[in-house]
Amino acid sequence: VLGLLVVAIVLFSWEKVGVDVSTLFLLIVLIITGILSPAEAFAGFGSDFIILLGSIFIISAALQETGILDLVGSRLLKMARLHPAFLITYIMAGVGFTSAFMNNTTVTAIFVAPVMAVARRLKVSPSKLLMPVAYASIVGGTCTIIGTSTNIAVNGYIEKVGLGGLGFFEILPVGIVLFIISLVYMALFSNKLLPDHKEESLTEEFRLKE
Image 1 (cartoon, rainbow, N blue to C red):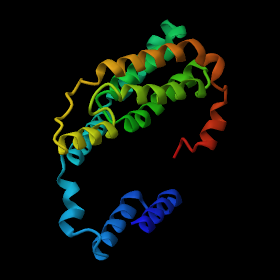
Image 2 (spheres, rainbow, N blue to C red):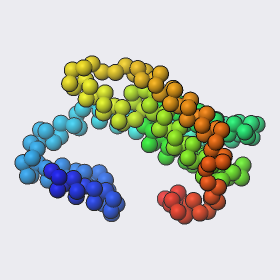
Image 3 (cartoon, one colour):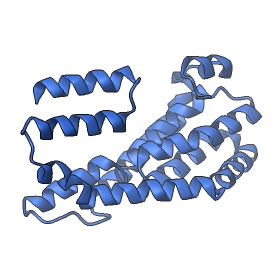
Image 4 (tube, one colour):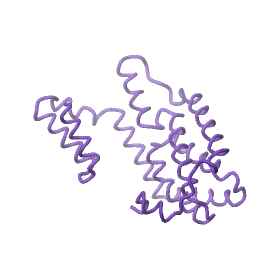
């Protein structure tokens, strides 16, 4: 198992083989070696955790394909032009709220394009806005059970050991406190702390086009 774990880390970091292909390959190896029975190996595909995660990704794709995110981007731009001083506040509030009800990694990926467009039109460095997007996505995901896959996994484990599951908004008080602290901190200090990179260097260095 430890050997396969090392192989998994190498394959995931190598990126020449898809993560899904690598994962299924390792799963098959676990079956062939007798470490897992076929029933144990594929039991996860029928778990509530997997079904819920799959549903979240379907919702994310629907939001992207229906043009709702384009509407969000245009609204952000409109509000930013009216109140440029509150640009980061608007962006973090929108990302944080969305992240509470969707997978936070997906939310971050979805908001990159609209935020880049806003930065380009307002002639603001994207590096001043993308970091707040990432933090808002993380802390927004701490507000509900489905906000992050980690929350879902922990809740599933709690139910499995018989301690009773968490309510949908049970962790909201803690999440709201974290979000407000992050929002205030970024709104007050991000302009001084965040780097001022040009868009061209960001695009090339982090392969944003890809």
